[in-house]
Amino acid sequence: MGWVQKGERIMRHVTAIAVSVLLACLAFAGTGNAQTVQPVQVQGTIQSVDCQNGQVTLSTAGGSDTFQATGQTVANVNGASASFCSLQSYTGASATAFLTPTGNAFDLSQIDVTSQAAAPSTSGSLLSSPVAIGIGALLLGGLIGYVVGHNNTQAQPVSSPYGYSYYPTQAQPVSSPYGYNYYPAGYAPAWLPAQYPSNRAYAYQGHRYYRCTNGGWNVDQQCGVHER
Image (cartoon, rainbow, N blue to C red; front, side):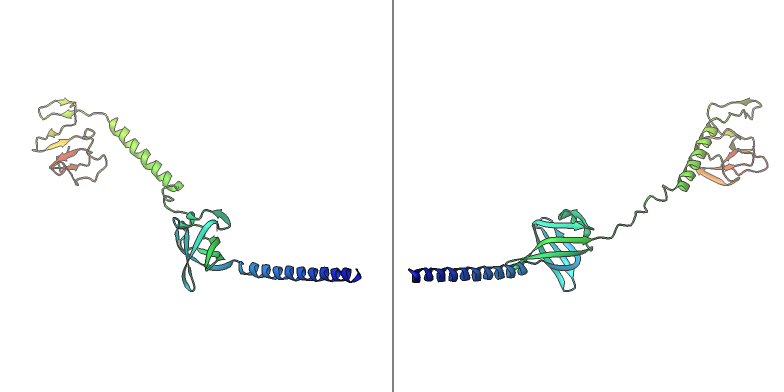
């Protein structure tokens, strides 16, 4: 019986040693596997993003490399979470890709994009400036004043060459006894400019109109000694 008990003790000891060795081997194997799945970092700039196929191409010092994204791929832009497809608008931005080995390939586990903030747009800034608004208000006010003042101009009596005066219902040229037509001061048609250089031709519908120094307009005749 003593030999039997001694043999059992020896077997238990050998078994314990064997289990310890097996656990140590498994631990070393696990450590080796853990080292092989450490992510690899690749830095470059985004060359293109294929949202449909889930691929991103980076331009690196060694050329262009395309990496495959998965459903677990994490994308960050300037530290904020973003969708993978949104990276299409960051072409040319710096990026760091974290790759995980899967068989003979690498899957994209994470990509961090660093993008410079866009410069504020200057379009429309001139029109929205206080100076431009003030000038626009002055011009609009002047235009309204001109229209109101022009519409409120009192009609002036027209001297007829037959010796009497009258108020025409519409601005009509008056025949001058000197052989030309004219619009008297204060009763020119609305399409003639209120302010215009004196004795300079203003072409309109086949006629040339000349503004005289008294405010009247001659038709097809420069203002002269007999200007009205």
